[in-house]
Image (tube, rainbow over the protein chains, first blue to last red):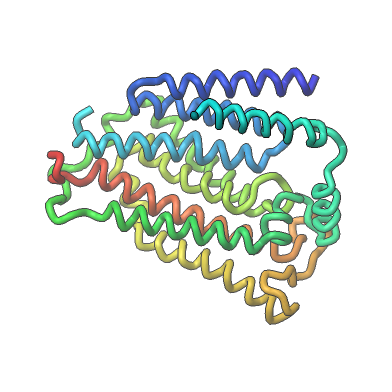
Length: 80
Length: 240
């Protein structure tokens, strides 16, 4: 049972990573990155590492997409 | 040429992976030693014990790296000579949907309490200083998501958070010196251990967790403050 959960989580992470790489525009990649962060959190949780999952959830899902979008907005000069 | 090197790396990698213990097997010498040491110091959360008790010097290095990166980001994002405040406000609260604002009202106190809980119970439940600090900092920015940038600016004086970040870093270093004074080793666990699983337990793990939580929360708030100021409140840079 635990093996099935792990295989599913790993497959979702692989699909999520491919989706992030294949997104074209950086502002859209920020959203896919947030989703990928949630998938990674579930993988870490399935691997019984809740501290790592908390760190990943807080940083990779909330902070990094926010910084990416703010940087893009600044670079484009407010037009986007 | 690349494929020759890549093929060699692949062969070595497979050889190394096949020689390791099975995934999820019970052979794990570091786990046996680390959990034994964590329980000996009265810490219920073994990961926090490794972070703040057994390998606390590594956490000191990580917090210094975090401090330096926030400093670097703040230095890079300071306003240049041509940039100045936008006239006419930064976009008011009337542009936020009602459902978003309701979600913000409900989630803002919840997130602050959850963040404080994760920091304070770092030695009992999963979490600790860093995780709780980031949750706290993200919670405060719900004021911006569900309200307006002006609301965030009024409740978030950046100088206060710069000072509290320094206070957190100094508290961590200072607790280490307390270890030298009392037990002769830097960052030794010198506060009484208390009962296993109680709130007052695990010695310096909880205190160091608080120090790290204050520093990380303040650091993330300062860094996001500079990002937001550059992206929203300033105009007149070389691109406009």
